[in-house]
Image (tube, rainbow, N blue to C red; front, side, top):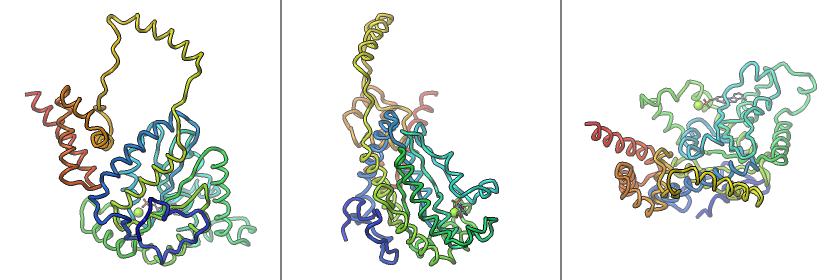
Length: 371
Ligand code: AMP
Ligand code: MG
């Protein structure tokens, strides 16, 4: 079935999510990753620009929550898509097994310090949803010291309600919570675990804990399905993303992040006429203080920008790249390397290669110059 944007993966509490009917190997309208790279790169660029406005406007905060089984690609998605977000107004928070201090409080307590200020974005790499996932599968509350009245209720059912209310509270007070479940198949997880065991530089990623959790696969699937159905709302939706193909998961997440920011539609703050008039006076003073006539800056590609963004800028605006090529040969070399890369191996994974190509082009030039 051909997908239309990301809406087919979105749950708002109306249509039921059925995990057994979900195709985690879906690649939407694409048959190959090469077809998707152009959109992906452009999405990153648009996300980056919108974030600058979001930050400048300081009107609304956003939390992107990521949940998934082990090896579903959470970290990779965050590295490639959220890497586009400037640390200026964006930060990742990883939530692990709660510390003893954290477990001695209610389960939402540890999230308050990670809340984004308005204009900021928080990435939650795992979240309070662990308390209705691993917490549900292993009945973790049974080991906690809790008042008797809590034992008399269905703790998990209560948590769904509490989480929904918590997120509604955040929405009503200026923060959107967008939830993303990367849904990988059991077979694909097996392949990725094997690759982690076989590849030395991936060894650190696998633990015996991961293998133990895999034995509870069906319980986890039930917990994920119920979690989506119980906590999806119109304003705080869940997106269930097919995650068997990393490139498609990354593209889809880029679409979700972009769509969210487009919906917020942040605007550059406008200053009042009086203030503008006042600074115009000041501008005259500043211009008079310069030795010569003031010339506006020539548009350029930023030399120290995020390489992914640089690559996107090139695709976006070849004209600008040409200006730079004429005026700044050193930088242009890096750009040509990037262009070649995009032409020859246009894959989502090539962003890492782009970073290397830029570094290499600059290093070569620096070596050459210093001789
Ligand atoms: P990782 O993200 O792979 O480094 O693993 C973090 C681990 O912390 C996972 O096994 C999570 O299930 C676990 N974790 C996170 N939050 C909780 C929680 N509230 N209760 C129990 N385990 C948790
Ligand atoms: Mg893990």
